[in-house]
Amino acid sequence: METKRRIAVSKLSKTFQQGRIAAVQEVSFEVYDREFVALIGPSGCGKSTVLNMIAGLIPPSGGEILINDRPAQGISPEVGYVFQKDTVFPWRTVAENIALGLEYKRLPRAVRQQKVAEMIRLAELEGFEHAFPATLSGGMRQRVALMRTLIMEPEILLMDEPFGALDTHTKLRLHQALLKLWSLHQQTVLFVTHDLNEAISLSDRVIVMTSRPGRIKTIHTISLPRPRDVIAIRETAEYAELYREIWHSLGEEFAKNGV
Ligand SMILES: Nc1ncnc2c1ncn2[C@@H]1O[C@H](COP(=O)(O)OP(=O)(O)OP(=O)(O)O)[C@@H](O)[C@H]1O
Ligand SMILES: [Mg+2]
Image (cartoon, rainbow, N blue to C red; front, side, top):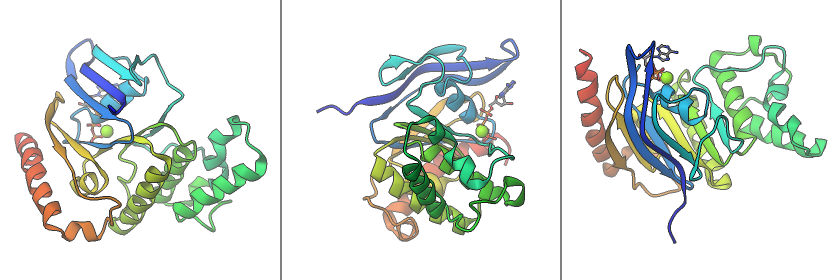
């Protein structure tokens, strides 16, 4: 049986300012059902722009986007998006922020509360349920924003550097939690990062973009066995080999920008 295509972008391009800035140029790739794909590339290469187009937030200048093999038209209910900037509501507590989307689903109150409690536990935010965002650290706010999307269990999950502002230890724990949720809910994930360790330890495939205008440079299959232990995996020879291979591709792009 053929695996279903969830996201298909073909010759996707985006220019800004009446064509003066070419952000993304003829990007084509596919993400299959239950696949975890990372998109990596230098800052400013167009990663967020690609995600924004797939999410239906900005129109492409050229090319095509299919979601579940249908042309994407604006914002699709099956797509969840974790933004690069944490976007929690300051007037809502941690628990109220996480519960936001559930309020529109007709779920019994007890079920909602139980789901929220589970997300708070996974995000290690216990004890902060009733805290307001202004009293949290940046990393904590980012975790609230992440859980607010994960709780909706979207079929397709777009994430833009959701762990960007976190320290290594917290990052690793959240990687483990994310992989657990992903395996439970069998979601399709497109994950933007500029952390190669993160890309390898989470993904089935890593897509490397060139520096701006962003094009696809190389695509790498990560056949490390699952379930993965995100700490132990880094000590394996296979991991080191993948890191070397992808770093070479990525490093050429960094060098272009005069590292
Ligand atoms: N609304 C806009 N108007 C003009 N230029 C834009 C706009 N949005 C993005 N750009 C430009 O497009 C390019 C790609 O931006 P984008 O935010 O997609 O990069 P990125 O790969 O996500 O970078 P980072 O890793 O720093 O988040 C950049 O040069 C940026 O300045
Ligand atoms: Mg970005």
